[in-house]
Image (tube, rainbow, N blue to C red; front, side):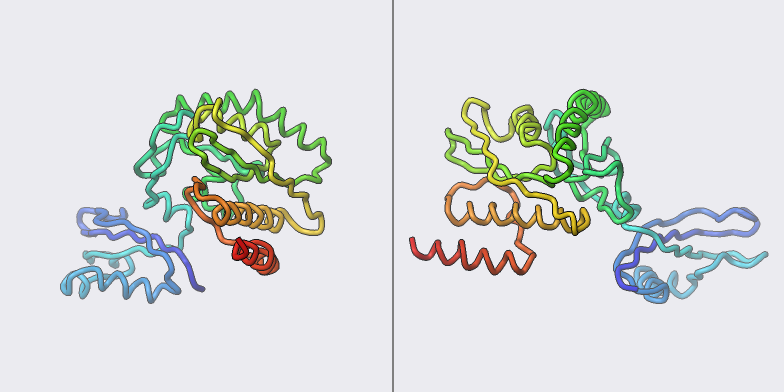
Length: 275
């Protein structure tokens, strides 16, 4: 049962004062990557001094008794990250810096489905969650989404679902820099977002090119199709890193599909040695 999350609350309980209530909460935190409750209990005992640890109970004192006790409950990644995750990103609408506790900022689902799947990483996967510096920015985004995104979705559905996504290139002539990205929408919608954001440079200095179209494999589910799209994006990013000196992608994703890794070694890495 590896990777289980636990929610821990520590209470000071005095029978005469608290009766049927939990008591006064002294601590609250989450633990992850624990295998079972006994491991959690041992971890908690090690956190506190010997006296507190010695008297620590893991059940509410019985009627008439008092003491410090701990409630341990299984939890999920969502609540762990809600409690701890920190942001260091930009507002999805106005692109001002957004830094601080992620759960305190307005957010909106921007993935390809109607809402999050049970195992989605809500606070860390910025391909599925957009964060905003204010609720005003979130409102502007939602208004824009209603006016524009639906139109592009309809156009993409006109392809009968045969296109899963695209890999595109933005070249900045002034800086002689390259940026490779992916999109599930029609490419000009993503281009519009980049132009509006302004982070890639002045529109007069930019060119936008679709490097490749990735067709949907109808024999595989969306998770596998997305994995392939991610790998193709990684392919092109690594290719430009090897062939161009000024690639501005912040991250350099790895190719994880073995067949593509082998092909990249044969087709790109070995070719680069010839020049």
